[in-house]
Length: 107
Image (cartoon, rainbow, N blue to C red; front, side):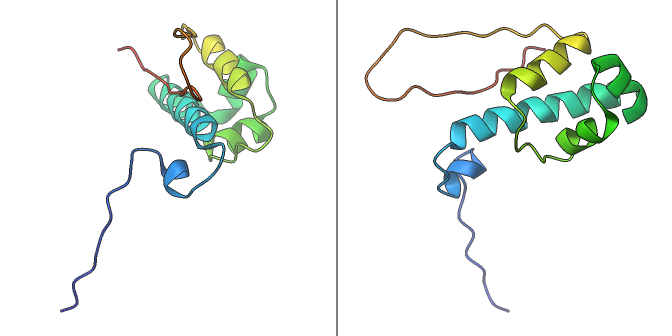
């Protein structure tokens, strides 16, 4: 039996793929995953959820299926607020180099 070599990722698949905007893509995908989970927990259909959020159902479907081109973090954050979540932005003190972006879910 052949042994496969598996390399452990760094926690951000987008960075592992070498994408320049990896942090932004991870934030967007994490927010979209929270939105999907919220809709499931509320037992909402996409039709009902899209009305609640105020976006067309096909656009909601696109977001929930991870097709996030042209969708901003702010857009998803607004949708989460309309689903009843509080959304907070925290900016830490400036330091050398490029800062990091990530989502922290409070339970």
